Length: 132
Image: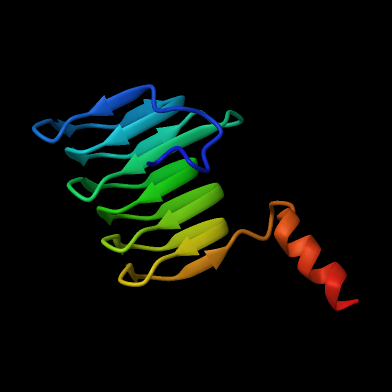
């Protein structure tokens, strides 16, 4: 279900009954169903997928290339490729993204900021070309 648009698969799982206090670093794919108090950082320069399920709660900054959120995050969120906010997503913090897909019901309490430093997505290039 969560791999329809992903470039990599989920390599690791933090289960619903797991609670972590401390920073988490990963590469590849990570799915979180439990609770994390600490920052979550994907390895920079690598393709990464982070899934925050509807059962998950994260208190800390989150950084990943492709981020799928259906749970709760308290802290700033940085997505260098695609950020998907599913219906049960709840973010309290500022959100920085390259491309954003937001479903009805998702809530963000903070600023949404498009990351100007990344290149345009092909979809934006296509839209600009059709307007010319």
